[in-house]
Length: 213
Ligand code: SAH
Image (cartoon, rainbow, N blue to C red; front, top):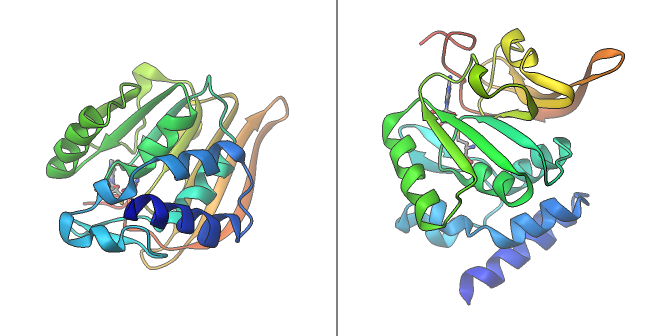
């Protein structure tokens, strides 16, 4: 199987080689068929070390950044996770392999419907979707054990921090529209803490608590 071979090489050369060690993350990336999350024309490039276009001027993140952000969330099997920016659905599928349930929000309708079909086909029954602006989170389902924002925010939306459970982790890119830092915020008995995980580059988070449309 051509894609299985490419997927194994991706995990070894791009992910393990760069220091990702969480066994659940490595197992999920070995399992999710990334080539099905891009258009047929791009399938042969799906396991390459770069982001790819998914239409609507959006991108599926580079495999390594998906692994890095997922590892930073430190997920357990019982966790409920919120993702802002479904895009292709690939990151949500990786999360769904590890966590109990994934809530994901997308603001571009064609991407939302395409991901919805794919989750059905691949039987990801633990992914719940919503169409709309995700910058205010998902209050009805809060609090979350983990929140991941897969688009670049101008600042950390306070409303998302407020939807973190005790012990909860939020990972998001924060910066200007060209480059961002990957920031992790977590809540424990002593309050909120913030760690900078380094530079990254994402498309814009557009919405009420993001960049203005
Ligand atoms: N996690 C995705 C990455 C997609 S790129 C994947 O694995 O493919 C970022 C996505 O965030 C885009 O699809 C974009 O439309 C979406 N997005 C940007 N601002 C948003 C918002 N306010 N609410 C929901 N989705 C948003």
